[in-house]
Length: 575
Image (cartoon, rainbow, N blue to C red):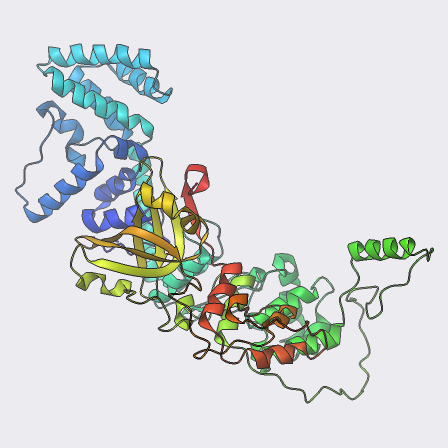
């Protein structure tokens, strides 16, 4: 925990907690209770955070360091928190110790602070506090300073009992992850949404701890995620359009009739509730890879077995309106090539007919397509640890990996790029924005000043991939980038490859017929795209066109179904 490796741990996983842990380095449950309670609006507004951290560091360097107190009368009340107010209980203790308040007076002050700071009520308590402190020999300026700290704490703070209980849960979370990492991450995957991070970020953290993430498999996955050796096996219920109820039916059929041996066997034995869209999504994320057939072959076979989708109610009404307007009258016939019903639960007799397309083979699925499919269908990546793994050396020039931060001097000018994990705009931060990104090596913390935010607001709020120019700020093991410019990582002139390096993809617009595709923006090809090919061979044609994908077309495709990012602060994030 002291290293800040706390992603997915209860109460200590936020960006602020991670940075604080590296400086405070709690050694026992009492320290951990303070750690949990200190990153709250009350201690922050009350000015307790920086003094406490500095005093912890000085005590670590010099065990003989004497902790300063605003007045000796406060030593007993604030001794465990090194002279600052961190727990709610200490508000009452300070008022009793310094001003001689009765329990009733101290509780009355606490309630007055919670009523949106009634100015008249606080003024009355200040006079009583000042007079009581004077009676104990405390001078006016000291009494006023302590009273202001007490009032500032009214924002929000933890009682000590609450902080101790949360600190214990934080320690237990860390212990479980250390002793049973696979089972711990299975629990995190199965209980989303929760905490500070998306599943995508949690999956990357799992890999950093030696826990792999395996794609769904129709013969290996259960409904929810499970532990499979040292890896997490994604459950069928996480596949888009499939859902928990249908996944339960599939798993029950597998338990009754044994593993599915082929696509036709899978289609025959599963219920009509398993729609074609869900089947294709399962294929795209590798759910049928264990059958030993390429994904595009499986998609083709699915289309042959299931045929066109049934006509929807909207399409039927549109057809009837069109035929009525044409003066045809009566019930218009269904559109040719469409079935009037969907899959049936009734069994069918298989005829021994020759398949004219049995020998048709398609190209393999590129890693970029797999990554795009996983984000669109699962909302996180499972096969690769980071989207940038497929970008190679095409990031902006002079981009610095987060792995190099320890070796760079404080104040270095750096350029960093990454996937946005979280955006924060705390109401206590005076307009500052905090962006947590990740590159292939680990997290990057960026601090955006209010003027930079106003200039780069659109990119900060909306872009899933950013590159930031700024200054590296180092404080012990804590590294921040003070942003001077925040930009979208897209096909800007600085990043775009020449056509001689990566040829334009001819007819790329045609790939819209496939469920997952790489789409190159129009700027990369001056030639108009030909009409979309709606023939049965469109998937094979798309496979041929996707040879040698452009990494920036890949990023553009990811931007349309971006990796999820969490936003915290006023209005649910940056505004």
